Image (cartoon, rainbow, N blue to C red; front, side):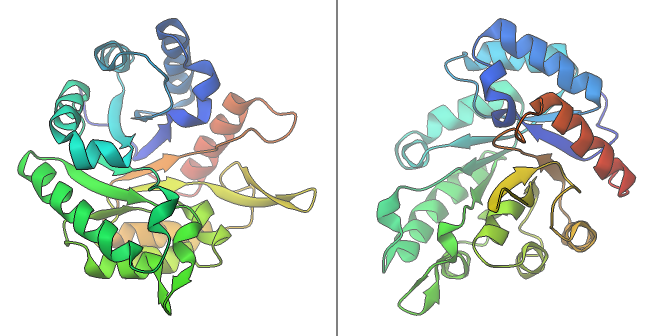
Length: 257
């Protein structure tokens, strides 16, 4: 299969309601490929077997650019993770969200140590381990910002799968963090931040309030490999596939190649 023309991927979690069975996944992958997406993050597909998912991804000429796993997979089930990544022909996985117990004094230290051990083992098998943030990481414990503390103390092999929406939600600046973690952001979640009915809400890339020029520039200088579009929930009264097509088109207009 030829290397993708663009760096734009899509997280299947965005269309999880349309990926509950192999037949649904088949149709959804076809729609996403038709939009122009050439890579997918395999997340949110319920109980579909990995082998079946891998075959459908390949059927549509797509790449698997990332996956997500829970903490137990990295602490107790690395061999299974390695086999899953082999089946998907994927070299990047990330912790989607740690348990709440880590968000306490000393939690960043403990998580850094645990993920460092897993990261080194995965690297030996050609797989990069990343950490996907929400906004909880921007709380301070003992005067230390959890997110900063985590990456300062973790092995340098641990990557950051920065989520632009959640960085903004946490009161910080996405472009700034991409620069701070330069060289450690091979995959990023592109999610725009809008205010709808006076509440924060995800929306199509370029239709919200994030500074995409600065974010994309920071990604380019950091060596980011995959720009993964994610929209957790549809904009009210709008089809999610229509939104994902708009995000793809807007990124292309912004010069993402």
